[in-house]
Length: 407
Image (tube, rainbow, N blue to C red; front, side, top):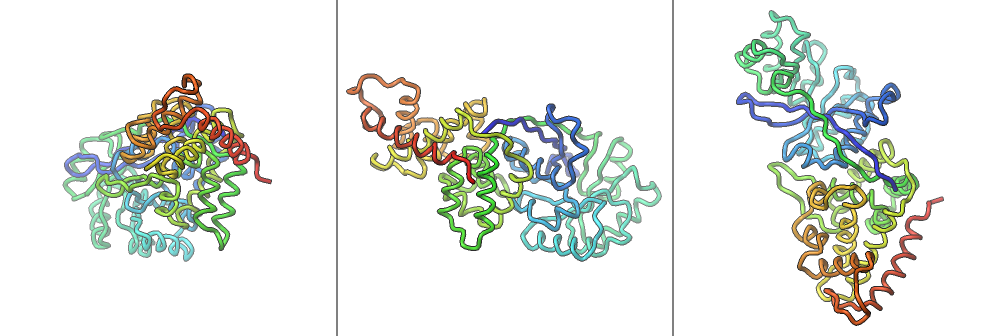
């Protein structure tokens, strides 16, 4: 398990009142990987964008706004984009996509799943009839359209029943002309230049990612098996909680407090998509001492909670692991909790707040740091040092087994 710096570009999209209504997510390379862009295809670049967005935290990156994500032909016919919830995503069909039967079938699947499609860099509606029937938005490449042809293009798009987005708006004159023609949305340097947002992500070990993907492909895969694999890797736990906690429309959030909650909410299809992203975009490091500390803490919290009244073991495992993410990622715990969209109960517990699981986390962290006093000293959870020591021994044994490479 290692830490990787991630960067994601974003550019705001505005409505007619110049209010930000969405962001396009753009591929940007981390400084240490500059120079390798030639080796990245469209599908991998999009996977890197999604991986980076989950690592940074979608809410931190764009708030409750929808995101536009690029899709080439290969990606349209796959499953990768489905890792993000349809209510938050507009899939941009790149201008390089040939609308053959395979691409159209992929677009149709996305629309049926609830995603909206936008056609990117459109300069003419010629040859786009099949895509226009599926699209919700057309992005018009202003510099590539002659001024005298723009009104005809707008009329053709309106006849197709789509909304219009003017992209590459660079001058007030272009903006005024597009407003006059009735464009719905606007994007370009005049309004906002792309911004780069940086963060840090936990990388799950390659063997664990492969094990997860293999189980998700198997016909007899069940929630318990997935839960067992995920809980063995802090990087998987972080990404899973971040993905499952992404707010729906209008900023509402799903209630996710345990790994099982997240797995059930996402469902097998989106779990498969997430595994594909992990296989393409992340996981180049092996287990570290810090990740072992997180595994031991999570398991220890689970074991202690099993004998503490009113303490949920599932919540205790997640809260214990999340409480270590600040050290793993090198950012304050509040930033971590915001990034994964932690609900109040998980936030309180992971912060060692006043609740049964919070008491457990406080005692386990204090034990790991050697901050508990003599054997007779009281603990918040009521578990003595002997009980904590026993839980620590069992947790270390479990963590070593969980982190063992899968052959």
